[in-house]
Image 1: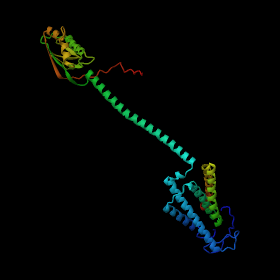
Image 2 (image 1 turned 135 degrees about the horizontal axis):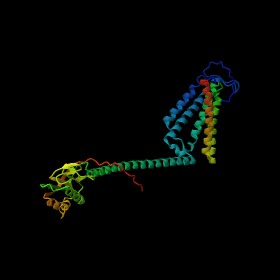
Image 3 (image 1 turned 90 degrees about the vertical axis):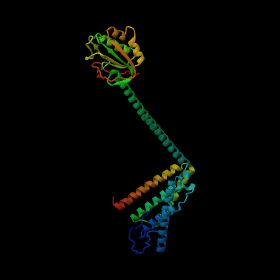
Image 4 (image 1 turned 60 degrees about the vertical axis):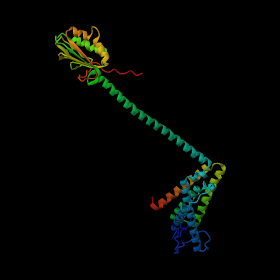
Length: 118
Length: 261
């Protein structure tokens, strides 16, 4: 949220907790979910970078962030799932990665402009 | 999220929980609980993201990701691995060929050097540029009346050569391909060097054959006796031909290129 002064702290803290948990627990990903996990990660990263950019633009909205985060992940997973059912899963996951990658690049460029004014 | 349009006005609220963007959403909601719950949600989502990243990194790292890979991905990975294997195999083949070439090259170079050294030794013995030893004869021709002339010695040299003498020296002069024996009895010069009786001939070869060659009727022994001299022929298992001559360097001839077959 725009007004939350502890804003940067909570996501970073959450990220650290999550990474620590993942490293410590070292869970095995179910085979059926393995194709979707990297897609979900990239989609979530897209949402996170979008959130950072919005925050720097001073238009951050927590609700939008949460919704976009969840919907990004779900839509990306659904697209890949659909592709798998249609037999073009590899191509569609490539497409999803490409699109999300372009968006991440754009968001990072905006963040960079904010931070370095260049 | 980035498309969200909100007012840019600064919210004056000093609360740590922040404020709601006024333009949308039910403004009546209590501020603190919602902001904290949303912040918590953000934290949880980020935690999930970190968790997923860590798990995914682990999965990729441990290679167990292949188990869940798609069929076409597996086929592509397999093809990649196969082409890489082919490349590596051909590389191995090339390197082995190279290794073999280098090894045999070293062998043949060493053999060539050995062969050249052997030839040089053989030629040096024939030319008289190095001392030689081996089985052979020591012939001593005494000429008290000075009737033995150069033709007798020349006969001796030719008979010895004909009988297979490999190298020899006459009165301390090494005999080579261009040796000349000239002069009258008592005044014999070999290659320009004046020699005096008794003439000692040392020849390397099959001593039996060489001795026989000296003793044929009308041969060297007969001629020396006719001239009033005497001859001693002493076979030995080991004689030394240690007189040297300088190498005959050809002035006009030069090696012709060997025609390739």
